[in-house]
Image (cartoon, rainbow, N blue to C red):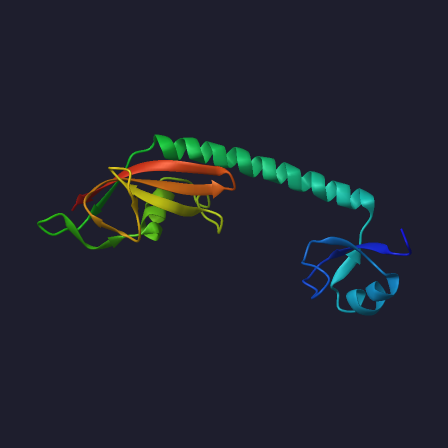
Length: 161
């Protein structure tokens, strides 16, 4: 292997890699820099294979969970009650955070939380994409990205209190 050793980085090392990366480095670099700063540990091929298998298992479990959540989301009917004026114009708006908070009330804790869960678009009843918050009473549809490649379309209505 050209006199290099395999290490796993525990922290970000500028010019070398991110935390969790498995890289090949010169033994002197490992001893003098990475080991002294507790930035890396030696790792064998068996340990790398074991980590890859564990990650694949965790990813499959997350994907299965996302599919179950998607089916539940698409089958539910959500209704948000907000104060509105006589013309159906809302006082304040209904944004992504409000919609996600309402959906989280319907699911077990932690199910719809995380950085990767985002509302990608909101459409009105005619199918036109909205930019910004919902300002009027009516029926809407949101697309929620649960995982990469898995998204759910949820229909809901905004009604007066």
